[in-house]
Length: 472
Image (cartoon, rainbow, N blue to C red):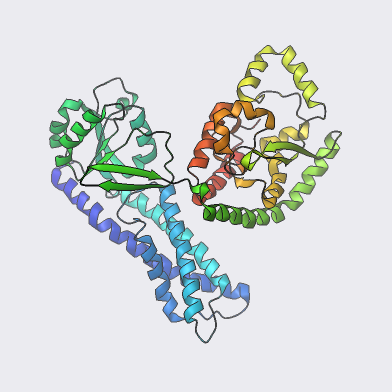
């Protein structure tokens, strides 16, 4: 690509793209008002009196919350973008309710049904317009920032996997030519040649993915490349540190950078928010699945002797045990069947020790049990644990009391919140993940909790369960 053409695309990316996104969002917010009225009037059976001022105010308030969320200048992965839009939409509805309460017209307050419909429509439509705009702008070459990545190790691989949609990666600067990434992307040269490479390949941004180098070496590379680009992004060596809610503080006098992380689940407000979310969504789900629960219970009783439900003790919040409701998927003499099977199949004993599961033919599981396990239907009764406050829709795995010793140092972190029907472990491989792997995922979830993360995991669970991945 010629330098003039590249500079032209850089200018479009920097100045035109934010304007295009802003115009699209305003049009969508404006159109969502008309569409919400058209949908809700037949449902409510009356004419909705939405003041003409709200047709302008609603989009304006929306945009006022979108701009500080850096949704126009910064290119983010779609999931994070959707999360920020969700927050903006929530704050918009709350603001409108407060304003309407203060200055409502003679026709009364705005219909709450209309506001809920507007919330759902505007959020969905903005996410959709962002998704489509991103595809179109990428195809014409003005969405992605051109970048060169310094370093091609494991850190760079993770960066490419997570953020390649937002970057046109020109190539990599790396001393070790055996790196796997260099089989897919151009190898531009070694670390010592960084300045010359940037002269020959002018880009907007350099990504420093070299956490293995010493601090002194990283700073040296940073100073060498900064004069040639608009932005330098540094990936620090802090893997494992919670990143769900990071604030940055700095001191110019002392040249000091401070990353401050918050323990979100220690906040009383967040605990209440999580509980309210579980109660509202959990109650709605419970009402919808009652017929399914009845059918499954009858199938279990007809298939084998014993009760339809199996209420087992599990470790809950604060380390307290509770009765976890599940459909019975095993024969009543399951423990004896397991011991007999492991005695006859030594190879299965090692698998049991590693996964605490038998991923092949499990003699303990009934015919109906195999079916309900495949689709995780055996866990549906846990929705009543959620309503009671003993579990969450999303959370760590509900561990057995006998597993406390194996959980070890992870126990205090995992017990900070209630266990979940689903969780990060569920969407990351389910029973294909080792016991220690589940502990690490659960610990990461707790340390990085957010309501948006719970919503994302709930939707991901649907795909995982339908795909039957990791179900045994």
